[in-house]
Length: 85
Image 1 (cartoon, rainbow, N blue to C red):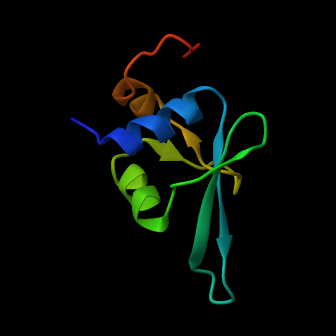
Image 2 (image 1 turned 135 degrees about the vertical axis):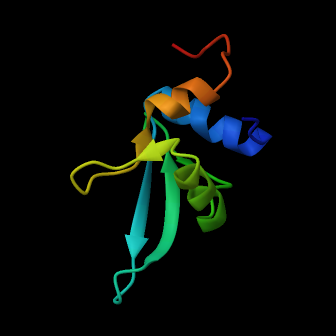
């Protein structure tokens, strides 16, 4: 399965220890999402549509109500880069 360039960048950040956090509104629906690097910096360019695409591809998941992190399937989709450890 081929993924877009922005999806590749987000999965690369998540593979290095980043996370995707979301905010819900009063009716318990997702209002906004933000991607945080392992250092705590906010990465721009992640919107609700991109988040839903990653979830649909089972590249990210949440456990125990925590932030969304990369899955094994996401690690298979991400292409290797020099600084990806």
